[in-house]
Image 1: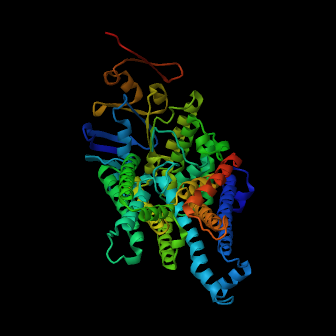
Image 2 (image 1 turned 45 degrees about the vertical axis):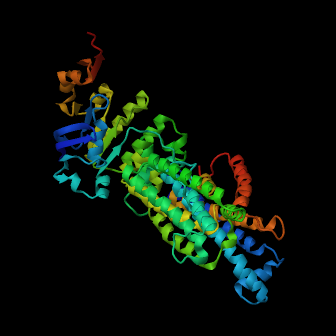
Image 3 (image 1 turned 90 degrees about the vertical axis):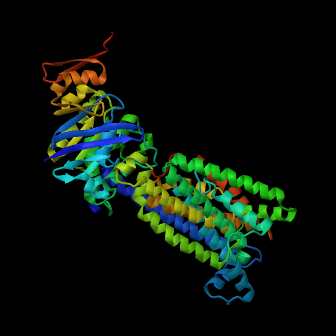
Length: 258
Length: 353
């Protein structure tokens, strides 16, 4: 039971991006980190999986089902892409936007169970007390938590999180990632997270996929990818990785001067 | 739901806010009904409210003179004010939604300039682009040009990508083109024609007829269900394009569909009664302050606010100087602006919060 990316090619008009990308057995119940430098195509890869961009070739398959063959509404029910973009300017309350995310494209009125699910997720993210506040009143970090709540209430099969902790403080980063881990394991979903913080990524992800140069430059358990040559080449830095006594990886990056 | 209303959690607070929002919708409708009654009962001729209502309920009961006044003049004008106000309120709300900009109004993209040019062309040169238009020449021309602008806008955005930037840039181009063409016609026309053009542009409800009312009703009956069916998509659109498309909203298609709805409402409104600004801008703002941008409440309250403002303006246009009916376009802004400013000052926090 897993996600497979088969020979995926994609490019913007004058900018070829991916050339026949292959990734097999991206497992349900595990967090997979997608890493790589700016502009390498992490967000574009997510948009392709979410069906927001059309691939030029190749397929994305979840448990033998080609996502490209799904209807648009089924696709958006299966996959949710939480973009990096944080700001929302709508005259709507936190509860409004999260409930809307739950009901979107699914028709019908909000049932008592919908409302309870929204309440539950808001409490899990520690923003239950913000539920009546207009989203425009929130700080960047709070807005990011609202985005995360929108992602979680949809109960997708594939969760794509693009830099979900970029505006959060240290504690919130850990709490949110722990919640994502719990949801991923308990619901058995495929979760891909793009993260710049390699240390945070290695703490929660079982697998690292390194994007570089239009292909997957390295793919494996975090320690192997972090200690390989490909990641140093992709970022253009030196990387020193060490397992500390708590069992987590310490990632130390440094600029190499000629 | 009864267990929810007893709890104090976020869900219960949401439930209470929903009831409050429904209350605002009901309140707006009641206020509108009141405004309509007042509008019908005010006017030249000093008839009592009883005589007027009696004639409405039972035509002929107070004589044929009153029959003519009420059924041929006052009722069409008052109902037209309500319908046009609602059309402009809806068109404005949707324009602000698809452009994601609270400063937009139905005429932002040049529809009114095009309509004015069409009308001026008919008035000054007697040129019609609609065969057999006869007495409806001016109206038909105005409508045709307004609609043509929308179609040009539509085609351009289809070619260039359905983004807010394309909409606004092409819209500005339309706006200036038609304003320049209008000025050209005005420069060429005689004094009487010039006066007619100016009067047309100021807007007048005196052009109301039962036929026009049925057309407006039919259009509202067409457009309102379209909007309500897409209410969740439109609400999601206010969270930004990317979040909306993640939730499965076909953003580009939705924008084009709404542009079509806006065009048909705004073109008809401007062709029938001339350019009445302000309502399409302020109606949605009042709605936003009262119920927020959840379209299930935002749309009806925008429509009702627009209708109330135009209805009150219609009353005042008859009431300021006895025997004189001022152009509705002038009165609307003069009445609306102080009201709007006082609302901004008195409502510190939006009441939906």
